[in-house]
Amino acid sequence: MNTREKKLEESEEKYRSLVEGLTYVGIGIDIVSIDYKILFQNQFLIERYGDFTGEKCYEKYMNLEKPCDFCPMVKAIKNNIVESEEITKPDGKSYKLISAPFPNLDGTIDKAVEVVIDITKQKNAEQKLKESEERYRELVELLPDLVAEVNTKLELTYANSIAFELFGYSQEDFNKGLKVIQMIAPEDLVKASKNMKKVFNGEIIGPIDYLLLKKDGTKFYGRINSRPIYKEGRITGLRCVISDVTKRKKAEEKIKESEAKYRDAYNLVSFYKDVFTHDMNNILQNILTSVELLSLFLDNPEKSEENKEILQILRSQVKRSANLILNVRKLTKLEETQIGIKSTEAINLLRKTIEFVKKSVQDREILIKVDTNFEKVFIQANELLVDIFENILLNSVKYNDNTQVEIIIIISKIQKEGIKYLKLEFKDNGIGVTDVAKDIIFKGGYKRDKKFRGMGLGLSLVKKILENYNGEIWVEDRVPGDYTKGSNFVILIPETV
Image (cartoon, rainbow, N blue to C red; front, top):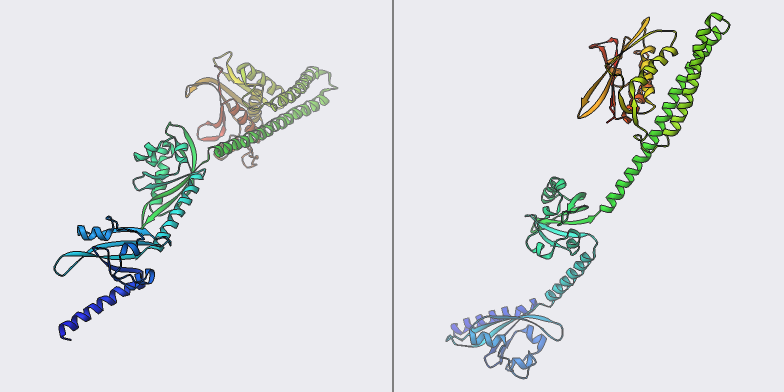
């Protein structure tokens, strides 16, 4: 054997080894002539189908009685092109066939080489993947919640069928590039945008409630959970689940309203209990003082007129207590504090209260002056208005160390934010109210501090009554900057429209 023949033999052996080695990776190779004869098979094909060298391929490989003109191998030879197809054998095995023209040394083409690749595992995996995708797609479609995917342009790339029912959009809207921001109400658009930005930065957001927007403009509450979508290590969008929580929100609001209603009812009962306790204590104190005076003057004929006045005070206090009980019984049945407010003439009621205070406090010299240009003024109030006037006047007397108690009541009218008010200023020459006490004397939990002799619980009741009238109260220095010169309690009450 000469050198050339030896090299040719070595080359053939090398390539034969290479071709036969493909058996171990599931690849078959054969060569077929233009008349369908099998010229060569590697071990892969021999192991599966037997050695059919020299026989017709269509009889052995294809189980056909006659050749098919559309056979990839024949097409590859006749058309000098590479052909490819996939086939599945009766035994369930799947193969990919690649046929290419196999030229002779002189350039003519009368045979083709065919590569047969076993893709059974790949096809089975693809089928399982397809079945898995179909199964999970069906599960997603059965969910009562919306499942959607959004790309970085905020366009919806996927949404289950309930999305169209929930938001009222059509498949055509979806195909046109429906954006997620179109489904968020303007009130929550900023919040939603910030949270979507966080998701695109890799954060997991949710659950968060948003006010969402249907195509027809209807708004509803949705609870959204969001996750980033990764592809090849980078975030390409977000996936979210949206639940309609409108019914839950409304139920929560009703619970809050119910809680507020019962809390208001409790506060109302506590309020009237405080009113009753405070006023009844005053009444009993006035009765006790009158009884003591009466016992001193009873055997003194010269005090007959004083005795008559004391008896009148006693009668008025008994009547007042009866009215107090009646008012509290009536007011505690009201569901809203505004009910029972009516047009009330203020100035005449104030003058009667002044006379009552003067008669009730006979051991002090009291000078009360009313400065007003009005004979009558009607305001939005009720029977508790007398408690306001009486409380402030009695406090001015009680917290006053002067021999003569001086109280000037200035009555005027003002307009504030389009509402007309009656303004009453009670200026006294008492001990005054410190700046610290000015902020706390109207609070319900306030207790009198001996250091500055505060005004007690009564002023918190005054404030509550005025709030029911939509009125206001505050205290100033009678002489600005010097609280020791006395106080000025200022009251605003809306006039009757």
